[in-house]
Image (cartoon, rainbow, N blue to C red; front, side, top):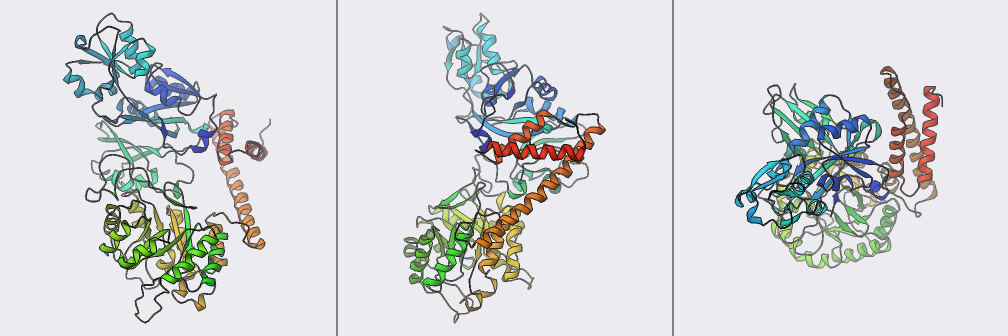
Length: 637
């Protein structure tokens, strides 16, 4: 029934049953449902102001506030006091978003006929969700502080008034449901944000409050960031005021570079830089002429065996440019699989600028490629160049690739879309983002929805590289589409010495994956020798990307993998101690206690989430960090 879209999967497995979670309303309210979504003890408050005060004063551990409803949009009754507290300096973080399905029932005292009901009580936001239905029934709307509170009022009143509330609330207070659902929209639901004090938790959801006197500063902000904009009423000083869900504060400031734009961030999720925000969900596509590729929906996940791309799942596809022999592709498949690659690439047909250059071994090479993939547990990705080849290749390959030269070969796109295989679509060297998405639309319209977009560089006036990797275009595409996007640093660079840097850049920018060319003897390669990584260089790249090696990798390389991780751990511990000292100095300056048991509990939860199933190790690490921090800051027990 409930769907959590915040990044709290690990936390959900280990619910904190002692957590007190506040909500606005009486028992039976939709807020109570949201408060109980992740465990803990729900506690109701008469107003949103009282709720936020309780969170500020430490009377509760967490608060849930309704932010957006599918029928009426922003829930201003909650968002206005929320904004006021944040502007006044209350430091909060958003730790989750919970979506609660809403069915607003019309309920009255038992025996009350529907025709006798002339007035309906409820929270103003709930009444706005059923304006037309109540008007059609000739029922006047009466505002009260809560949906469940409305049921309570009607239950204690001897009149024929009704309440607009959940069936759960109606049954709790002994009312009879006269109409099951009076919402103006069938698929109704409300999104609640879970808030905690910044000192006691870490952010899991990007959320910020923005205000400005410029009426043009926020134009197209939702399209450019993929964020959900929740506008509030303007004031004389700030005509534009809004909550922004799903975009970090730095990006908002950069996209709205007006001097008086104020962005108050409620913190950013860890590793936020490694995520690209998808378009917000809704009913209309971002681009109406591309209903499949730009549909407002949850990120698409393309999964083939161990290969998984999209919605936070990231992977590396690797292998030779051309499949040259059974032995060659088997050797390289073994190398890339041992370094953590989860799919094998290899060309059997090679589109070449020179008609006399090596064109590939054709369908015979497909058998070599598939055999190498099966022997190493890797699905295979290979390019199709003609409509006549699609059926034969699709019978054996796991993913069909459409190369840059064929991005607008519309007959080929349609044929690939009918083949029943996922399609990896490379961007043309001279194509815009809109044209790239248009090509994806051809494939999806033909029936294949599992499309992987691949940025492989565009043609510019620069001659130092083969192409120019358009990281900006990749980011721009993400705000328009739900499809996974990967990058091809090999074709973008055209030079092996640049591949690793471009790969790390695309990965850091938030690419869902990479496709990299690897050859164990580039000097003898039959195509694109100058851009292929040797296996040892690929292993180094895999270490930098934190891929998972397996036991087939030589022991010396596995040890190098561990050494690199140990070095990174040491650097991170030192950085943490330095920042903790700054926090301690700040607390001393304001007269606050340096040690905070609630903050310590939040740190322990963070480590337990990062080490699921290993609570003992998580606690020991936190104990060591606390001991080091106390020694550094000369804190007595």
